[in-house]
Image (cartoon, rainbow, N blue to C red; front, side):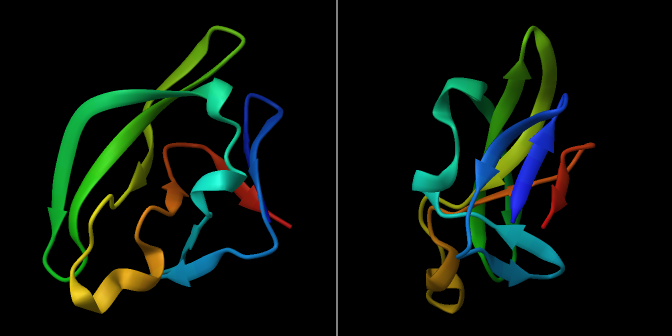
Length: 93
């Protein structure tokens, strides 16, 4: 699977995990040069507290377009540290 923003592959992996129709990419599969930490957090009742990244490719910034769970609940350990996308980031084969 590939995550694409601004016609650039920002993550790629054959080992994504699908949860609630979102592909979660292993942390080592994202191209870190395109990611900047965000102060945004949200809470999922069964996964835990999510943290976010801004995605920036060639000056085109997509605020809070990626999220991950640094520490999950026991029910979501299989995606702990994995990164998922929204806000226009395309995820495709």
